[in-house]
Length: 146
Image 1: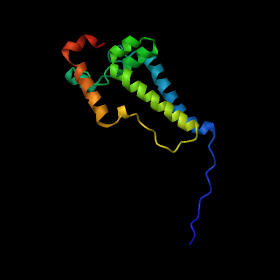
Image 2 (image 1 turned 180 degrees about the vertical axis):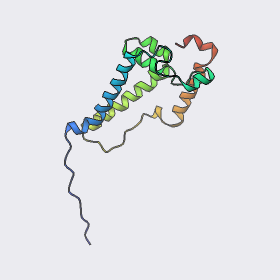
Image 3 (image 1 turned 90 degrees about the vertical axis):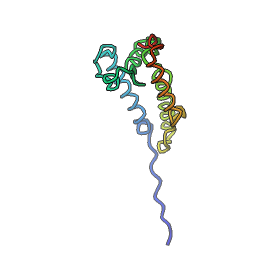
C-alpha cells in the first residue's frame, strides 16, 4: 500500500496572513479610543474592581485602564503612577508579542505558535504580580498610588 500525499496548500497573500494581527491591533486601538472618550479617572465610569470594592485593596490591575488612557493622552508619569506593572511590564510585553506575531505572519509563518516572553510565563510572572500587589497596598507606599 502506498502512502498518498495531499497537494500543497496554495500560498496565502499578504492580506490574509496579516488579517489576524492587524485585526487585533484595530481592536486594541478601538479600546484605547473608548478609554479616551470615556475617562476612566471618573469613579465607576468603567465599573468597579470586585476586590477593591470588597476589601479596599488594589488588585494588580487596578489603575490599568487609567494608565492606558494616560499614555494615550501623553502623560507617561501619570500612567506609571496609575499602574506601574501595566506600563512597565504588561504593555511592552504585549507589544513585543504582537510585533513578533506581525513579523511571522508577514513572512508566511502563520502556523507556528506565538512565543510568549519568559517574563509573562510561569512562576516569574506570578511572583512579579504578587509582589506588585503586596507592595502597592503597603501604607508606606500609598503616596505613589494615583
